[in-house]
Image: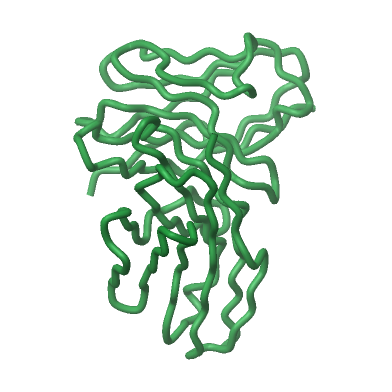
Length: 115
Length: 113
């Protein structure tokens, strides 16, 4: 069964450093997402991406964040200058984009720790 | 925007008993309600979903009910097993913003053997 994959599984970085989180969505899906989950809290929407552009973003997704689909398979989240409060689990998800098939499939996540 | 509330935050049941987790939503236009199970260290996995044109859906030991009038939906797990222990999240999404899921705060289910 196809699945969303993410790398790395864990990332430790120093405050102020740039990080890039990588995701490979399910191959025939058209919509891609990033979510964040701070330890013990709910999963929060960050951004959705379709047709090579952001379709929606939350208030969390400020100028420090960017997303890119650099090739036909990868989908990345970049945090330009990490802050302590960026420490969280980051999940990538994808959905088919077919009408009435809104189901989003999540990857295993990247645990980011900012020191 | 949509706001989803989920209760209880923790639920402990004896193996074989039933578990019920409830969610309410605020936007009456929301029409798709998935439930996700998250095991420790893993990403959320879809376990069941329901659309607003259906009142109930069942898949083996798992069922979901939807009350559109009251704007709430519930997950029912019967004959619970230790491997059902996980965090469960409900979500809602409106048709005008179908690519954005609004998640509940999660329920940690503990099934005691």
